[in-house]
Amino acid sequence: MANPQSHSWAFRVRRFRNWFPLGVTYATFYMGRYNLNVSSQKMMDAFHLTKTQFGTIATAGFWTYALAVIFNGPLSDRIGGKKAILLGAAGTAVLNLLIGLLFLNGWQTRIVLGMSLLYAANQYFQAFGALSIVKINAPWFHVRERGVFGGIFGIMISSGYFLAITVGGWILAWLGWYWVFLVPAAAIALMAALDLALVKDTPAQAGFADFNTGDATAEDPDKDRPVDWHYLMQQIFTNPIIVTLAVAEFCTGFVRQGLMLWFVPFLQEVHNVRPGSFLFSVASIGVTVGGIVGGLLCGYMSDRWFQSRRPPVAFIFYLGQIGSLFVLGRAAAPGLAAFMIGFTCMWIFGVHGMLSGTASMDFGGTRAAGTAAGILDGVQYLASGLTGFLLGHFLDTLGWGAWTFMLMPFSLIGAILMIRLWNETPMRHAKPETAPVAAD
Image 1 (tube, rainbow, N blue to C red):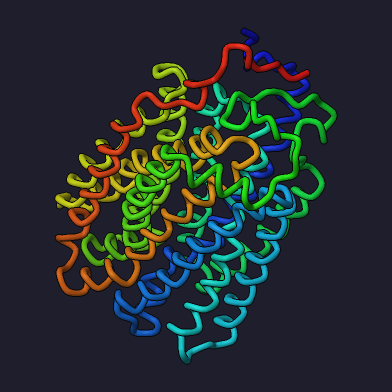
Image 2: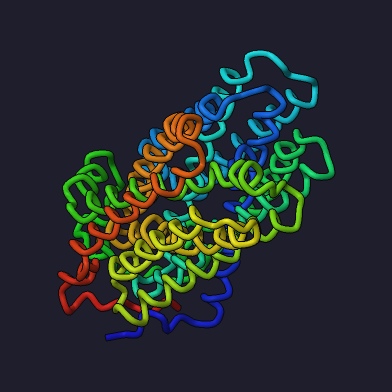
């Protein structure tokens, strides 16, 4: 069998030139999405919002994102990942610019309704981000390399959190808070221009031979036929592995956004740690470092220890979530609480990158990668919506003592689901003659 990783140096350099600008673009998307999180306490204080009211704004965005990725996934598979990422970048940049200008000019009335609508519109365009990257990278990475790509995907996410939370915290400390919307608008627009110049959907478009990626659609007898809606729906919704992964990602979404949406007010109200302070930087940079370590560790363990099986690593990381959430909820010292934010993110982002970024390519296949990523991301954000108004309501009524303990059961369910998929890989049922061909 040919070594699927025996690509030429020229191919690897060109592939880097493809995914690196995409990764930076996705990081700026996060800067234009999680600016709501970093400005949460500032917004609640400025407009006298309860956690339930602020959570309503977040829920409007999360559920719009959830519906959008389900529809935008098939659209990306049909029009191609490059067009999809450019469309998403244009819309996201415009919406962030509009929100920033409204606050700059003293917007004061109907904040909950207005921000819910604008944030929802922003999230619609944001929904092109992850699935476009998965769609573009699927033809560039063999299935045995995708654990490594899962780590890369985790770095993309973590870099975005650094821009949104850490840099956003510095912006809040030194500039008007509307700048946390204006700066991302400019950054996203810049990266869209670079993507237009550098990114190619397939190796063939960049002057290299396409190759057998070894995924779920690599040996599809109709792989040269144009992708249609019937094919995509059949490929995804009749696959019990993807359905199970979708339920697991629902659990991941609740834990991930349950932490990310509320850790800024948690640190401020419980431990008096404010954006721009040293301990806040420890927490926010910890999100980035934890995400990078979690993503790389997850990918390495999957490819090297478990023969490119994703569920065993996800199982380990779900258990890690439970332990770290317990310690975070019981932490009495501000320094420990700030550290545990990043440590918990290591376990959460590792799973997220592995399932949404890697398993979606594996089991959706190159032809349906965008749709698979859309489904997994969509159900994740359905759960995320519950962390807005619903978790906000419980925090208003029960207080911070119940916060992490409301997240832990979802990590447990995710771990149990991974046991059911323990030995699954897209190559498990592949024929021997379908060995991959190394790229030129």
